[in-house]
Image (cartoon, rainbow over all chains, first blue to last red; front, top):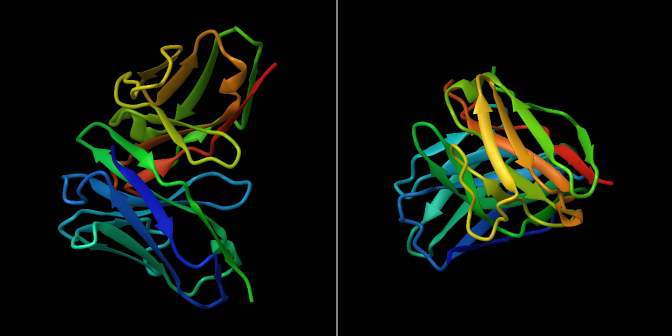
Length: 121
Length: 109
């Protein structure tokens, strides 16, 4: 079964760039699904960041679009997130997830375990 | 509208039935999916599509939809069902393709 694992620095300085990678195991990233990033600030709800298809097509949350880049590396079976100009408001647990999507439904399964990224000097 | 609205908190007596609702315009076009999240854990898919449960999810969890409202029903609620529950759907507008509800904290009394 497919498993996802996030990795990257747990601490990023203000105005810096947050960079995370999601490694996909047990299946191919070229399987026909989209792959997504979702974050959750401490004590708050889930916020969708964006998604990518293995072809490289992307969709982003409009509120983050100017700062977000999601990319895919099929050779390594992984996808990545870059978020620029970070502030304390970007402190959150960041999750990656596989997306199933059709004309009438959309769901995320499975999810990675999540990684806490703190923005602080 | 690209928002999904959930009640912040709901409580239920052990063994009773509880319904958690999610409202939003996008639900007129898309089925909601539902996620259970316990403290310190990643969200877990419990319902997707019209009323589908992933393997391993107990059949006491069910989903339904009417108009702009989706519902997650737990029949015979167990203590281990105490968690935060989030709904999610796509949005037909290009302005916000994917939305999550704000979450409902379920307390089992």
